[in-house]
Image (tube, rainbow, N blue to C red; front, side):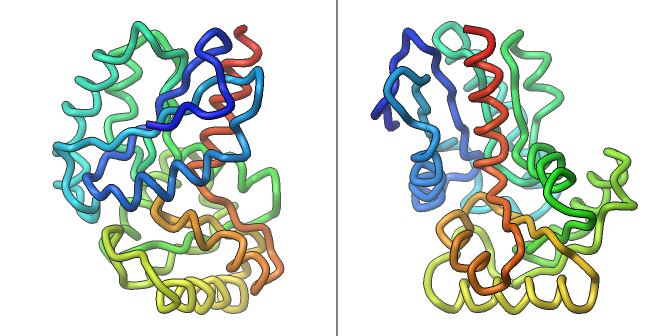
Length: 226
């Protein structure tokens, strides 16, 4: 957990990585840097040890719901807001029943942010199995008219390292723009955080890191509440 440049007196936001891959948590933690400042709340990034190495299937999503709720219940008394840092938003509705504190899912947060930055958003997904869940979530949010497509890079969350990943993300992002009309891109996994700027620079459209989108909303909520 990282507590730099923040104060518990000004709030604490717990960011939960629901998979057990520590490299993903480190990437999320680094992505929180812009939100850490003197006088601001603490951002603590934690790994759900009981989670799978990557969340690729609906079974993975379902398997982490109770552990996420258990962790939230454990941290509730010392926390002002929670972020579930998986693009599938596992356990989001159950988490909101577990605590009276605000809980943000990075998928829903990134879709909301995308509608403010352009007309049509596309999602750079990790695996083909992710695409159906994303389509379903977007349909339930009523955002189908703003949705270009989701296209997978074919690499799981536990293997998002190296230039090959960055290259695949740029290639898929370019296809979303050229073939599907996207003018905003969302990275469909918290583990992609380190590649956001490189993809944005290469493609010249806004690229949203979903964990940052949720963190911005959590920060605003905590600051207004304090």
